Image 1 (tube, rainbow, N blue to C red):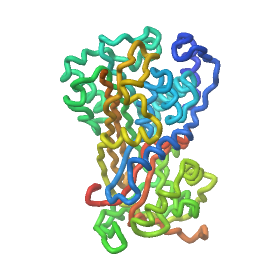
Image 2 (image 1 turned 180 degrees about the vertical axis):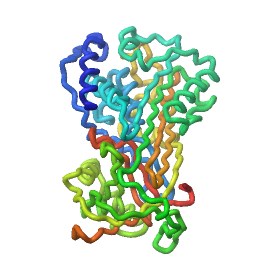
Image 3 (image 1 turned 90 degrees about the vertical axis):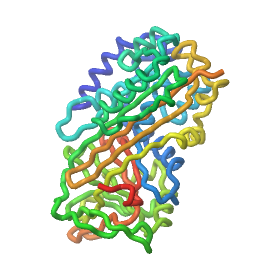
Length: 411
C-alpha cells in the first residue's frame, strides 16, 4: 500500500529531472530499491566514532537524519568531494540516490494510522550565490533563497523549521554565532511517535535497581511485562536481542543486552558489532518468537552533538568538503570556495509505558573562505544496553542510542 504511492512519485520524477544536471550521462530509467541496509553501515560506522564503548554517558542520535542531510551536498558535489561522499554514504550514484531520496520522502509522508515518522529537508541558500537553474528545479521543494546578511531572520527560519517538523522537540537547533558567516545551511528534521503493539501497564512500573557497574546501582522507574516477542542470543556479538514492535509492526525497537555484565560487557558487545552483524541480529528469521520476561527503564534523553562530528566524518573519509582549497560543489553552481564549516545534530527520545517519541535535527552550515518456548526468557535491561528504532520495511535504522546512566535520562 505504501510502496504503491512511492511508485507514483518515482514515475512523476521521470518527467521532472532535466538531463545532464546531476551527471553527464543521466539515466532516469534506472529502477530503485528502497532497501536501506547500506545506511545501517553508515550509521553504525558513525556511531562507533562518536560514542566510546568505555563511556559512562547516555547517547542518542539519528543516523538517518545525518545521512539525509548529507545527500543534498552530495547531489551538489563533483570530483573528489563527490567520490568521498559517495563512499561514506554508501550510495551508488546521484541519479539513483536522488530517486531513492525522493521515494523515501514519499514513503514517510504517507499517512499511517499505526505510527508517525516524518522527515523534512530544507536548503537555505544565500540569494547572492549562483545556483544552476536545473538544480533549482530538481530541488524546488528544498531550496529556499534567503538573505544571510539578515542573520537573525535566518536563525529564526531554521529553528522554526526544525521545531515545526519535530513537533516542538528540537527548538534551538542553531544560534546567531552558527550562522554569522554562513552562506548556506542544509537542515534535516526527523520525527517518530509510535505506540507499543503490547503496551506496558503503568501499574507494573516500580522503582528498581539499574546497575551502572556491577558494584554501583541507581534506582529507576522500571517497566515490566511478560509476552511473546522476537528474541535471540548471538554469540558473535556477545549479546541477547529483543524486538519490541510498535503498532502496525512496520517499525520496531531492538534492544541489545550484553551477555557480560558491567562496562566491559558493553564494550565487548560494541567491539563485535558490525553492519553485517547488526543486520543479522535484527533480521526476523534470526529472532524466534517466544515468551520473554521484559524489564525496561522508563527514560528520556536529549543530546547535542557538534564538535565531535567533523573528526568522526573525517575518519570515515569525508574530508574535502571541510577544506576550502579542495571542496568541489560545482554541480550546484560556481561555488568552489563554499566550505562545510559546522555540523550540528540534536536528538530527543522518550520511552514510556505507552510507546516511544523520538526526534532529531541536523544542520550543515557552509561558509566561504578562501531456551524453551513455554518458559519465559529473561531480558531485564537493568544494566547498560544499546537500542535502535528500525523501519522494518526499508531496513533503515532511524534512531540509535545507548542507555548507561539513569541520572541523565530521567523520565
